[in-house]
Image 1 (cartoon, one colour):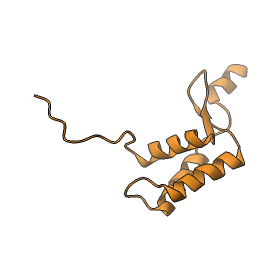
Image 2 (image 1 turned 90 degrees about the horizontal axis):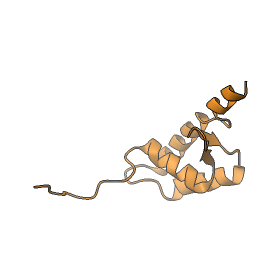
Image 3 (image 1 turned 180 degrees about the horizontal axis):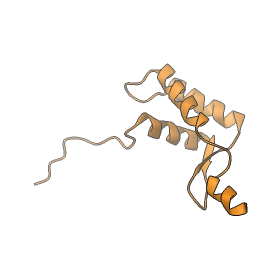
Image 4 (image 1 turned 135 degrees about the vertical axis):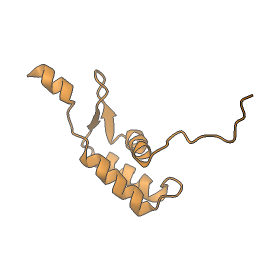
Length: 89
């Protein structure tokens, strides 16, 4: 018999939460062909995402930690899909 002890969180990692907030704010998007995350270079969308991180960090995470995690993820996302760039070369 299967017993449910509680509802599992949809997003399990801080990085997953950051990516979902960035997508929701429109600061990043996915390459339609390959799925790579791309920075949209939209300062207003980035500001919205940072505001969301400050005002609504995930449970157990401080606003400062959420913003720091967001900046770390953004630093690792480029503005072009590496596979699309390789196909064009």
